[in-house]
Image (cartoon, rainbow, N blue to C red; front, side):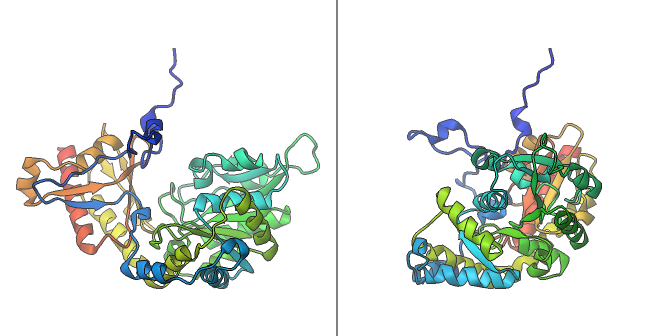
Length: 404
């Protein structure tokens, strides 16, 4: 009999938390090989995610000294200032601070689609579809309808047009919004072309639809395209952007759009438990991320490209990368010839005696498994040029070992 069960290891494995972890007697377990520093000094280069970026000293100082008030009453001055600043940067009428990117996408899509049963078009590799628990269905009664993502994060325009429902046909649900993502996580951190976004907006307008952008790494996309964030956002009705990834804040995202749209998001934020009180401590961190970290994002892109070129230069048939296709701080490695993601990650997290003798140092590299034969490495502010070189040294050593 054909086994139809989905193999556990084929799922997203960066941070899989078992049910038992939530008991009081258990500790949360993450799906990566833990590293213990004992007698020997080990250089650990953690490339699992840019969410690992730690608040800088300046960020911690700003948080401690932030002027705060009750944001539920609209009286937190730091939150209010951040919301105005982001609306100005984005070229949009208004914005609102939310605790997370998932909440930002959820409230945005629900704001655009206030009738249950509405259909939402989105890429089959997008974050909203893959990693947000189908929240638009759980909480809004909305139906996702997928479009086939091309390798660059776009999709075929004819497919988009074909999948827009006939609003006058009583047999069909109505299409409400088209979702885009840039940079596109599962499509290799690609910044989707502005021409494509313009074409999607034209299709949406012609069919009275809205366009929402999951711009969690919007500043990375703007850097990759050499444009301002507002140039990207001309082609969408709303956006959700994270402060807690490469910008280094401990939490928080911003949602932006029209004033009426933000009014509805404000109500939805309250309904899903996202209203906060003295949230200015988080807004202060976001301000520092804008001033301190955004100007440094190019280094993260450089480190990802440097690592990709080194891996490609190894000419391994088992570990391969599209070095010319790296747009941002995300680097995906594809594995062949029996090398699995779990095996590759586990080996990178270990230091053998032979390795110590060969390299004259002990290096551990941590990455995330995406499926059974794909690994992601993410570069961020806390990963220096020296650490990047260490990561390259270790990865090339393991590649040589596995190709031998």
